[in-house]
Length: 159
Image 1 (cartoon, one colour):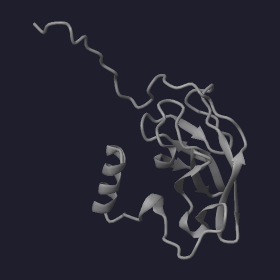
Image 2 (tube, one colour; image 1 turned 180 degrees about the horizontal axis):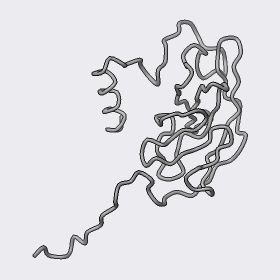
Image 3 (cartoon, rainbow, N blue to C red; image 1 turned 90 degrees about the vertical axis):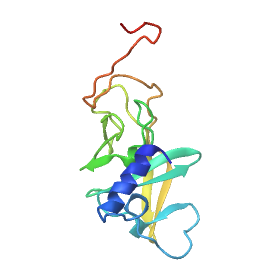
C-alpha cells in the first residue's frame, strides 16, 4: 500500500469515516460470472478500483450513473480511483490533474485523455465489458498542485 493511501485511510478512520475500500458496503454471496462488484457496494459519489483484462479501471457512481476510466492518471500514473469526485469530473490525488469521466478528456492538458470503459449494471452486479476509447500513452508534464519543484545539484558544495 502506498503511503498516500495509508494516510488517507488512517485519517478517515480517526475521523470515524472508515467505510472500507472506496466506500464499499460488504455484500454477501458470489458475484455473477464476469461481474467486478455488487451494485450495492458503490454509492453515489464513490469509486471502486478493479482490474479488467490486466488493466486497472476506476469505476465511479455519479448522479448520472456508472462511469469507468483507466485508473492511471496520464501525468504520473496516479490512482484516479482515489481522486476526489465532483459531478462527472475526477481530480487525481497526486497532482490535481482533472478528467471528465464521461469522455476521458483531461481538463488540465487537452492532449492527455484517459481511456474510457463500457460499464453496465444488471441483476445487482456491475460489469465492465470492454474499452470505449483508448487513452494517451504519454506521461509526465507540469504539476497542477501549486507546489514548486526545486532542483539542486548535489555535486555543488554548500558554502
